[in-house]
Length: 341
Image (cartoon, rainbow, N blue to C red):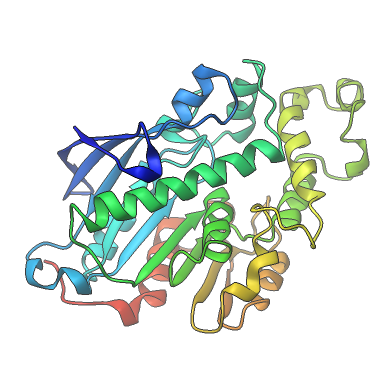
């Protein structure tokens, strides 16, 4: 095992194991980075211990400083291997891939359902006496930032010798918000590429609430929500913790300096760093118009609305993976280096 340094006192990176995903060889590290997020040990231990997978183009040992890097995050309650489809796409472009579990997803989830059911994951946490609110998510983003700094320094640079400043953040659903927080406020990465998501957090939350409770005013999401749902929609009682979280996110003011308000820091992005989002016109959770407005706030921003695409599924045409691969290929074409095959 190797001890991590100053930034993560008490943190450890276990020696890597060789793994294969999508037929490509990579290295799997196990990271333990202890932080107090909730004060409940059973929850914090899950959030602070996680795997990191690194895949880099082969036969490029004399050009390691030229290899671009993509850090990928899935959505809440989703495991990192749901992003495995990007590995061959990017390696064949000569681009390295870093996969890690999103907080509250994969092996960092509390419920360990890993089926994309956000409401079920949040209910698993609240059952342990923990309130999942904006303050908790802010702590999770801060922890994620320390994770990224350590992984970049201790694993990507020191162990894999990948030193290029061509770093892109790739996010899916909630992973777009988390990546957006680090991209805008912390200045990490030269590009952010989001699929089925955007990082105008209040509008993201508003449309998500509307998908769960159509035609119901958000003002009802308060202390009386149990009574209301019991009378009108008893099948949605399990969504109450999620709805309260979304209401808190929706109420973040535009002027808030919260790390969960990436657009407050949009002026830090500048005109050389790139923002690109792919979203479907049939997405039941998110409004494509909100995604367009989000991207329009950046000098080098673009939103691509895909006909027939929903939230990871399709009503017609090619499937989500096909669209996402094409999106990555086009957005990173100018970073393409020697073919790794």
